[in-house]
Amino acid sequence: MRVPCAGHGEVRTAPLLQGLWESVRAGREEVLLSPYLPALYGFVTHVLLCAPFLALDALGSVCRRVRSWRITAGSGPPPPLRRWVGCFWRVLYRYLTTVLPATALFHTVRSPAVPELAPSCWQFFVEVFACLLLFDTLFFMWHVCMHRFPWLYRNIHQLHHRHHIPFALAAQDSNSGELLSLLLLALSSAWVLGCHPLSEAFFHLINSWLAVEAHCGYDLPLALHRLLPGLGGAPCHQAHHTLLSVNYAPYFTHWDLLFGTFRAPVKRSHPE
Ligand SMILES: [Zn+2]
Ligand SMILES: [Zn+2]
Image 1 (cartoon, rainbow, N blue to C red):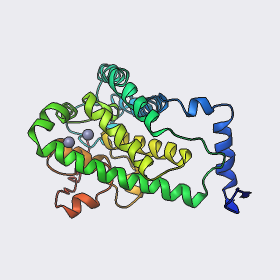
Image 2 (tube, rainbow, N blue to C red):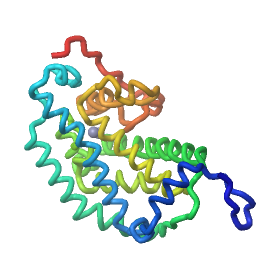
Image 3 (spheres, protein in one colour):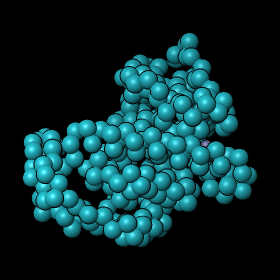
Image 4 (cartoon, rainbow, N blue to C red):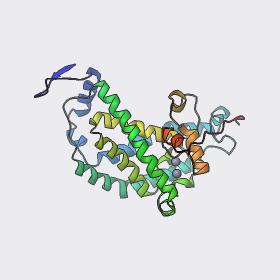
């Protein structure tokens, strides 16, 4: 679809994305500009994306087949419901007390706009992919620092590592400062790259999904790291939670390969 644009001739937009963007915008500009949107979106998408893994953990207590997909199949049953509930309240508390007010301030400072046009398909793809690459790089550096500097590890990152065998919801079970830093790094990545709000929303969604999948504790047959090259996935992140000094990057493997901190996960020979 070609749309006239003052001073710029014609702008090419994708009809599908334009339709989607118009349905998102319709009567919701105030919501889209709300300073509370980033934290609410981050929390709600995280919880919703974890829901299938809660069902899988519940199923795992009665189904051997499901348990056989667990990366640490020999180390006991999946986490019980009470661990999920405790984790949910901890994450909610940190969002309400730290992440929500701090990201609201950040959102106000960056003063976002709601454009009329959707991005083109190419722009959408490039922006989402660039955001993932930039966030992966920034988090890799921050994560290495949190492990290399004892003060940072003790006061910020250690809490996340109490999960020796993580589960989906534990992806955000971190100290308030770490949780806030993750969201600020994600928001800054999209801001620095000047992303369209639709690309940014999709980036945050993929970002949440990759974090949930990395912590889910399952090496599922259709997991993204099995379908797309260059992703570490849950087996690599489990190795990080076990060994602490390997696989620092959240999603891709190139930085760990480059810096010699990549550790391939051990192949499971005997599922339960
Ligand atoms: Zn983790
Ligand atoms: Zn770590």
